[in-house]
Image (cartoon, rainbow, N blue to C red; front, side, top):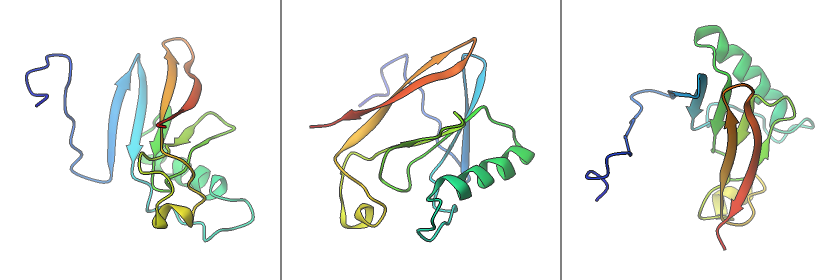
Length: 123
């Protein structure tokens, strides 16, 4: 249905990662199921920070987006964002603290990259 719209392009990843240039910044997109934390004390942030550091050794990205946890979380260091999910609190997502249906809006500038990110609630 969207094939006739000229300003929409599809980029279907052939591997774990997909990269996109936005205003001169490299964004990494990954599902995130490879990041394990087993409900640890520091939460998901510590293993995700380590994963981003490891991934950056192969291909450096300014920002990483993932969604595996079905909940919304924005990093304190401004390097990553875990997107919520439209189904909301599914049986799978509840184990990670998923709440209500949501997606994300990000404000990106050429000079500073991601300057803000907010959840958009779907109901």
